[in-house]
Image 1 (tube, helix red, strand yellow):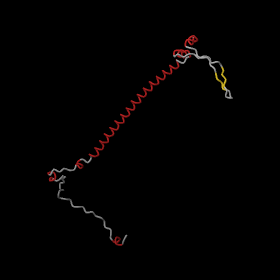
Image 2 (cartoon, one colour; image 1 turned 90 degrees about the vertical axis):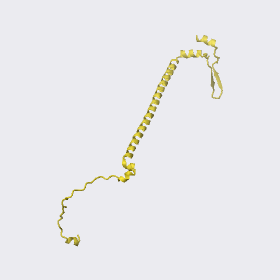
Image 3 (cartoon, one colour; image 1 turned 45 degrees about the vertical axis):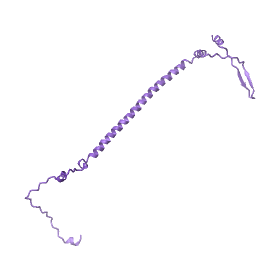
Image 4 (cartoon, one colour; image 1 turned 180 degrees about the horizontal axis):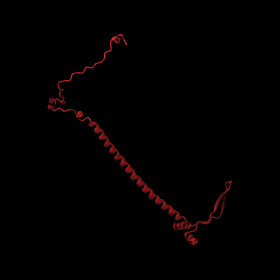
Length: 160
């Protein structure tokens, strides 16, 4: 504290109440644009008339964009699903073809059926075989007597 403030005696604060008004309060009213401005045909700027319009347009644009995006995504998924279904059907058809061919191989693998197919193709049975043996010194020795295969008539007689 300074000396100047220390010497001032503290006085109780008394708030004075204003005297009650005898005159009534003036009536307040909203004043719009000047009539002269209206008569000249000028309007208030559009942004001032609808301040929420840009936000509403943004929300509508986002909804439309999202809807279109979902439509495109759904279409792409449907196309992929159709391709997958077609590939599954093709795979099943190929699996049946493989199974049919395997069954054909299994049923046609008996010796009697192989011989019958060979005769039908015009093949003849081979005669006795001969072997050529190569010695370690590079020479060769023929073992057995080779004979030519018989003709069709001989093969038919030998097969019966």
